[in-house]
Length: 397
Image (cartoon, rainbow, N blue to C red; front, side, top):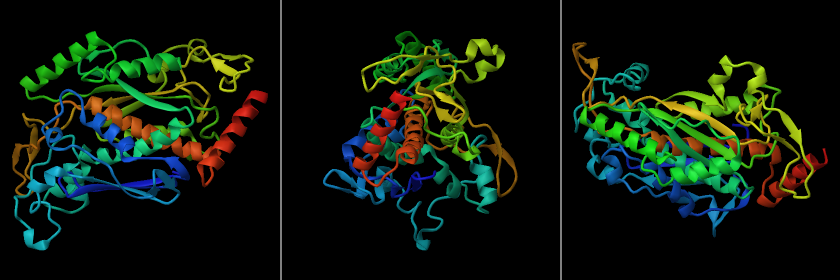
């Protein structure tokens, strides 16, 4: 990322998760409550595993904030793992605790286990699975909450909803209008699977119940969106400055995500251009918040030529079923090379609802970076001034 940088650290059953985000200007309001709100949302969702009954995630702000305002220096966050109490020897940094628990030697199909063990030359797959675990996304959500809080001060809202779990679907197309997206988001927040439709919610819950009975896991689809975006975030001039490319990488980096489409995405490939290009209109308004150029459709998902076009930004992501199964698939002992069944680690049956919240975080972090790139400054006051000036120029264009 050009202006904003962030890193996460920590293992699933280690002492804590740690994160640092650099490039946040001074003067923005931030509290632990802003972070904890999204951490709680990530822990919800029907079909989650036993780990969520142990943890009550709290993002402790260690640096970069004083008296409720960002300082402009790096912000560091810590999330203590309560399950560490049960793993103090098994995940100890001390050499004296080596071999206190047996090594994991049965790689799970669909996980990072085998490729990671070979790459990092280890005979204990726990060295791989602890870091590749989706537990890491708790810190992404914490850092993403910071980005969401900043964007909200400019009228930008990030949200999501689930549109498929297993064979159960919410079939309505992604709305083009901001108001409709925000309504779906509000309804999704009341659903145990974060689906905005009560009938589809019931079908999704039933799918998860069948998966539990049959020792299966389920994936699905979720929509993540941003409203209130100005025209011109991102750029067409170089491949790595294209916002859609950055967003695809950000969403695909989430554990278990195997596909991303922007706007109507794959459906556009089978339809003529006259049906899927979003026609351009112009209006005059005395309202400074109303931009003159607008569209009545949004097949492009709010991005054209690698840049936002003023319409809501919409993405749909595909999550594969979780690869840890109570009914294990065939695998190979990495020591003896004998055929056997894969290892089982405590896991979720379905985490699509949680993945959607992670998707919000990655979208927010990508958008706030593009926002700072466009309107950058060292303080909130400077960025607000730049933003207002740009919006005024668009109205005069």
